[in-house]
Image 1 (cartoon, rainbow, N blue to C red):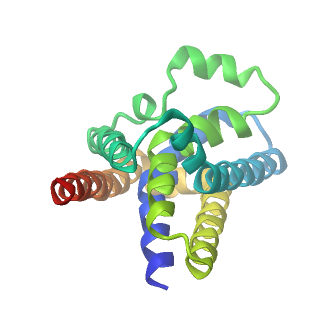
Image 2: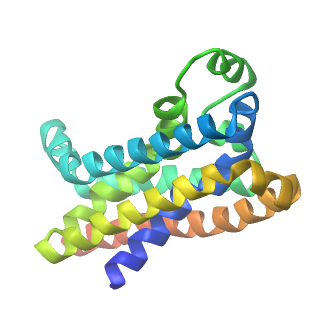
Length: 207
């Protein structure tokens, strides 16, 4: 249960679906309710698949390129902390890797669920590195089940938030979304720094 709770909140903080709400609203402003629900569902499914692949296959990619787990944790910590700073500063578009020109091009496409919503706006380098590093420390059968359920639960929450994005945007307003995202950003920075500290301590102990 501890593994599930920690990974769920860690992923939620790094993915930050609340911060994606204003971008999702902008990209789907001309779609009807049914189409928005479809995009929300497929975005959640794509995120789930991407995160599972990162969790189970990522370690082999590291081994192929000869990257140590400590190097990954430090890199992931920097990326996660950087994302958190972007959220604290309210730079959603920059943090999510999308600008106005790209947004206009995306609106002319039929399907935006996989790109850019699922990747890189939600499942980016920060969440992938977090999962790869997490697998190194939690790879028993029960732990893998707990982690998989946490990934599934986060995907469900993403679906519910995106499905309600237009309502949340009206209820919370821009200031409300910014406030929530800044709180999440603070937690995200803490997660990133903790990863860096843990990696440095691990390196020092190994010397």
